[in-house]
Image (cartoon, rainbow, N blue to C red; front, side, top):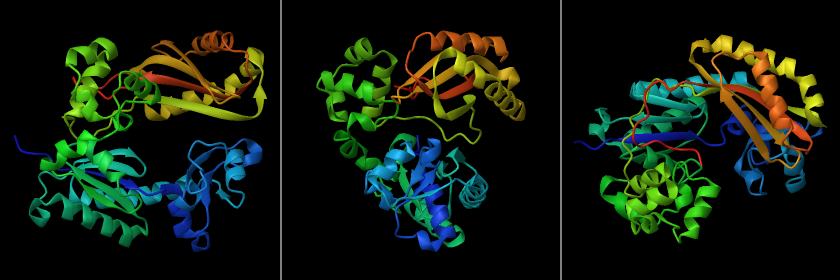
Amino acid sequence: MSTKKIIHLDADCFYAAVEMRDDPSLVGQPVAVGGPADRRGVIATCNYEARAFGVRSAMPTRHALRLCPNLRIIMPNFDRYKTASKSIFAIYRSYTDKVEPLSLDEAYLDVSDCTLHNGVATKIAADIRRDVLAQTGLTVSAGVAPNKFLAKIASDWHKPNGLFVIRPHQVDAFIQDLPVKKLFGVGPKTAERLNAFDIHTCADIRTKELGFLIQHFGKMGLHIHQLSQGIDNRAVKTNHHRKSISVETTFLHDLNGHGDCLLKFDALFDALTKRIANANAQPQICKAFIKLRLNDFSVRSIEQTCLKPAPDVFKKLLEDICSKTHLPIRLIGLGVRLQEATPKTQLSFLDA
C-alpha cells in the first residue's frame, strides 16, 4: 500500500492576523480579538506578542488585561474573517480537491496524487504557504506527514509561519518521545490517569500490553496503542459531517438559580431553532443538551435523547441541571447533537 502524503495547514493567530493585516498600526503590539471586559467578554484569539504575557484564547478579557494592561482588544468581525478564509481555501483547492476543512483557518489536504514537484509534498506545502502570503497577506504554518495525526502535530512544531516535515522513515523515532498529552483525544484527565501508571510518552505506552491498556482505559486504550505506533488510517474527508448545533450566551450579570435562567430561555431557544432551520438539520437530531458555565468557570452539562427540539424538553433539562448546582451562572448554552453520517471506524478520536 502506498504511503499517504498529508498536509495540515493552520493560519497563525488567524483573527488577530487579519486585524493586523488590515490595520498595520497594530503590528508589534499585543492584540487580542474578543469581547470587552465590561461585558464579561472572552478572548477568541490573540497574537504572539500577547501570548508572551500569558494571554490565551478562552481567557476572560478582564483577566487578560490584568496580565497585559496594554493589550488592544478588538471586537470580532466575522464577515472579514470569512472572506479571508474563502481566499485561503480557494488556494488549497487549486492544489487538490481533497481538502477537509476543520475551521475557518485550518484544514487537512491529501496531496498523495498531486503531480506538482513530482509529488514532493514538502515542496507543495511550501508553494501553498507562499501563495497564501502573496494573495492574502496572511501566514499559515504547515505540517507534512504520512497521516492526519502526525501532520497536525507537525504543523504546530515550528509555529508561527513554519513548515515541519515527518517523513515515513522518521515516524518511529519522532513518536518515541512524544508526550501522551499530544495525542488526539487525550485531555488533562486522561493524561493524569496515564501518568499514574508511569505512562508519560508514546515510548511508555509501547511498554504496556494492549490488554492492559484496554482493561484500564477501554476504547481509549486501543486508541492510544495505535497512535503510539504512528497508526492513523483516517482519510481526508471532503464532506465534513457536523456533529452538533448550539447557541450560548454569557450574561453581563450572573444568574442565580432556575428562575433567573428561565427568564433567559425563550431568546436562547428561538436562536437555536433558527440555527437548526438554517442548517436544515431537523431530521438528523438525536439528542438535546444544555451547558452551564458557573462563576468559578467550571462547566456543567446535561443531555437526553430527543428527536425534536421541543421547548419542554430543554426546560426540563434546565430544571434538572440547575437543581444540581448552587453557584451563580455566567453562561447558558442550548444545543442538539446530530446523528453520525456513517458508522464509526475502529480508530476514533475520543473526547477525554
